[in-house]
Length: 86
Image (cartoon, rainbow, N blue to C red; front, side, top):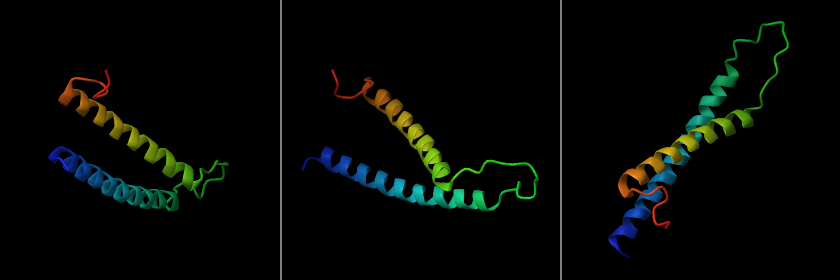
């Protein structure tokens, strides 16, 4: 195994651990948000959003930002939008 492939394997492993940790943290954050709703005593009808949708949209947005950061990092290091693509 070359040093580059070993380095990439370590980066992929650390990214997977980070994503698993952040997913758990975001789920806990959204549970706290949903249980402490300040609109519980209001008399107006409020459409409630399912917990799964809130978690999905939060993770989607944060992973999209992670992808943008990765694209900018790839461009800064290689000078190409998609490294290796001619």
